[in-house]
Image (cartoon, rainbow, N blue to C red; front, side, top):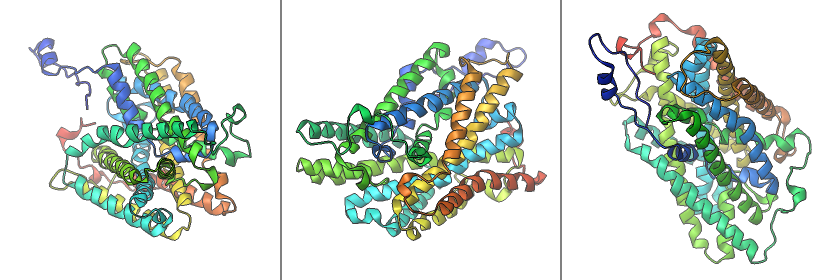
Length: 488
């Protein structure tokens, strides 16, 4: 990654030019930053979720982009340009160290449910390559999740650095190429005179209101847009952050919206909403379109491309959040020494294995819950709920830092920061609360069971577990060497 070089104080007798020469800043263009942001946010995975709304998916994508993506991007840019160390440093400075630990824990804990939902998508996609009937099999989904995750742990624990390149290639291989093909085939499908499965009239621009449950799917879009705080660390690598960062953000927003909206619309043209699987909807659309043109032999090829991109993304994310949690825990003693141990490659293997045991239990739930789509959705909501806790803390911390430390050096100052924090906080809180309402797709399923699973996953893992770690911590849990204290 191109990160700004840290400035260190010159030793007595040393000139500032010597330090500057030793640690030059590697600048990047605002266009490059926009593309980096797009690659880390955009994906075809949520397309089936919004395709059930047809033309209204435009509204359901644009609204969270304005009330969540934009505030998150601009607020995190100011924080990153003023305080190194990520969300832990921001929240610790703005609120308190315990809240900083909660924020970095939620950033890590969301991956525990993110990987099962991501690999659930991989399982359904891979099913179309082998046997489409497997897409509805919970046992198949559970097996794929466990095999892929533990393989990823094995690869990551060996300190493999080459997997980082898979993320950038994944944008092209698994997102841009299949997404473009999907949209083009959809346009040709309509151009041949076929009727769209979803009505495309102005009356359908807004979702039909049928109570809160009709809008619950919008919660998933908050997770689709999450992660912007990680890209904000590059704001110091721009020559003119004040002007170039907003340009990068608005360009990225435009690209992300196109990648999200157009494929979702293409799917809604071909696959009726009542036949759409939340996990296999992308492959359903490709299969239907290729069948229309007598080219179904291409379906497995597209499936392999989507699987490769998803697995590459999993590998690049697997060790990242856990390493951030490890470094903070070694400095502050938040985790027991067992979870802080490194293997011979310097990888936090014990954390990955412990996370894997929880992931295995979650994967087995796919085998025992009849509806794979419902299971996939529940885990997606839990992932969003846990991550939203971190965002709530980030917005509060940003507003407090602007008030408490107004003169602290910042490479970028977000316009109307307090207002942005208010909008972002309100949107995040609303999304968190709405996440406890079962979507209309669950029909007659038990509301109590749904709420219990979501609450148990989000509040238990997101709040109870870090609280217990914090209360049970001991002075002996601080294991960082003196040289590590400055690590962020």
